[in-house]
Image (cartoon, rainbow, N blue to C red):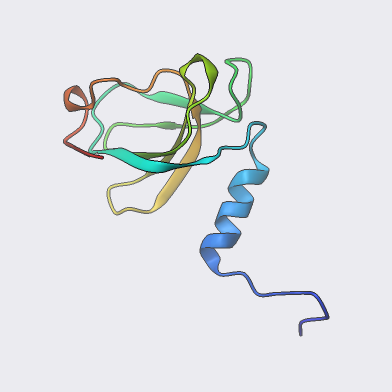
Amino acid sequence: MLTSGQTISPPRAQQFHAQVMELFTIPVRADTEHGCGGYSGPPIPLRTGISSNMAVLGSIEPGNSFSLAHQGLRGEWEYLEVSDEEGTFVTHGWNQDTPRNMGDVCSFSAG
């Protein structure tokens, strides 16, 4: 039973809230988006914030897809959301080594 002031959040909103709570540096949504499907490069660690000293949340692995839909920050840090081959969310976080030429490491790219 809900009490006064409580609301029911849709699952995606709950997932996003949980993701944000894991981060030290909060991403800001950009007005453009691009991504990579079928990543084939080496694993890329994703961190809680924009420093190589921050904790690793997960990594982009071969076969994953990832999207970049948030504003990059100083030092070329970018926030990525990663999904598996079926499109299911896997992990997220900040990385400074996102491939610049996605055609070399992605089966397809968009954006």
